[in-house]
Image 1 (cartoon, protein in one colour):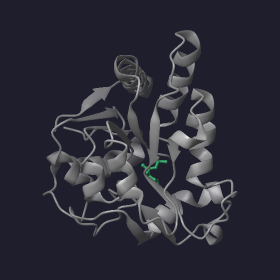
Image 2 (cartoon, helix red, strand yellow):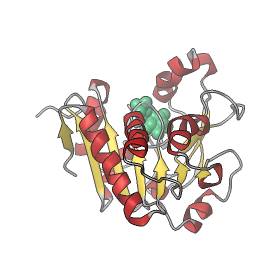
Image 3 (spheres, rainbow, N blue to C red):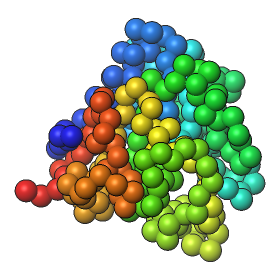
Length: 234
Ligand code: GLP
């Protein structure tokens, strides 16, 4: 897996947004897996801009969110469902019946993905501890959609958004590593110096559960964009 290193994150954001638009224009009905967090926000902003400027119709796009906190009220400001509605579905005019959210007690999520024909393109960020979605260290290659305990670093990283560590949930629900690897295209982004240390391990460590993002290296159609700050130093 050779990453594409860009001087500015906007270059990666534009490239990925362009790829998604090309898919949508070619096939119309496209299934996209959505990541949250600070990483993909620029891609979503660029898609919203392209919708207006180039009159792109995202109306037949179907989406599946990667993960969600547990033990939060459904209208809580920090739910990923709410976040993606605000940053993706609303600006792209995607109706609620095409937006699928993973939530507590949802047994059929994997089946829903299958029924939609599988995920065409999965957008991913990487946690400081090498997690993908909420597949924390220890998650196996075979793991599927399930409830998990959040790693201390994951909770720390979320603390600012929750106004303090005490209110960050301890549990979440996430697609598994196997679920993610079934997507036809994986498009991964990592920006900033706080990701540099883990990106070195993602690229160089032996593939295994200690750094779940190493499993991405087994995928046939993966593109990883890093900015210079996140790229391992030679
Ligand atoms: C979060 C999410 C992941 C995300 C990662 C990185 O907790 N569960 O899907 O990719 O951590 O977050 P950020 O993009 O804010 O660095």
